[in-house]
Amino acid sequence: MQIVWSAVDLEPAYGGVCVPTMGALHEGHLSLVRRAREEADLHAHRLPVVVTIFVNPAQFAPGEDFARYPRTFEADCEKCEQSGADVVFAPAVGEVYPEGPGAPIDPRIIIPAVAREPGLEEKSRPQFFIGVCRVVHRLFELVRPSAAVFGEKDYQQLLTIRAMASEMALPVTIHSEPTARDEDGLALSSRNVYLAPPQRKRALGLSKALRAARGAASVAEAESAMRSILLANQVEIDYAVVRDAHTLMPIENLAFGARALVAGRVGAVRLIDNMAV
Ligand code: PAF
Image (cartoon, rainbow, N blue to C red; front, side, top):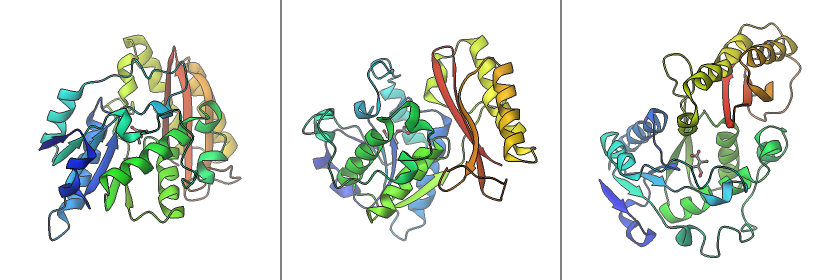
C-alpha cells in the first residue's frame, strides 16, 4: 500500500474506488474499505482502492471539535492496508482548498434539497453539508474515482452525497454500507472515544430508541417511544423522528421505506444514529 501526500502522485490510481474519511478509523470505516475492495475486484482489471484521510475544516463550526478531533494517522494506515486499500491519500489543507477553507464555495457545487430542507442535521449544524459537499466534490476532483463508498451511519450525509453526484452528473457510483455497531448496539463513531464509561451507557439510549421505533404502529407512536427512551437515558434530544427514507421529509404513515433518525447530546458529545423502520 502506498501513502500519497499530493494529488500529483495519484494518477496511477485514477478510476479506482474511493473511501473518503477523516481518519480515526474504526471497524465501521474498515467495513467501507472492505466493501470498496469487493467492488474494485469485480472489475476485470482489479481497480485500486483509495482511502482519503483529511480532517475537513470546512465542515466544523467555530467551537466544534476540529482542533481536538482524534488524529491517529499511523494506526489508520495499518488498518487500511489490512483491509485491502492500495492507496491512502492524505492531502494538505492547501491542496484541498487552494483559496483557503474559508473561501466561498465553488458555485458549480449543488447542495441538494435533502441537505437543506428536512430540518435535521442542517438545522443545528448549518455549515455542515456545505462543507461536506465541498470537500467530497474536491476529493472526487483530485482522486477521480469511478465509485465511492459511504456509511449509512451518517444517513443524511449519504443521501446528500448521492443527490449531489446525481444532480451534478458526476461520473461516480455511490455505494453504501450498513452501520457497524458494538455488540451492545452502540453505532461506531470516531467521537465515541470522548464518552466516559457512564456516558457510553447512556449513549445506548439512541439505538434502544431506534429499536423501539421499529415495533411501533404509527409515526406518532414511534416518535413518542423514541423520546421516552432517550429522556430515560438522559440524552438531551436534538431530534427523534421518522421520515421518508429518500427525501427525509415528514411522512404520515409508516410506509415501507421509512427511516427513524435520532440526534442528541450525552454530556458534551453529540451523537446521531438511524435505522430503517
Ligand atoms: O463522514 C465523514 O467522515 C466526513 O463527513 C467525510 C464524508 C469524509 C467528508 O469529510
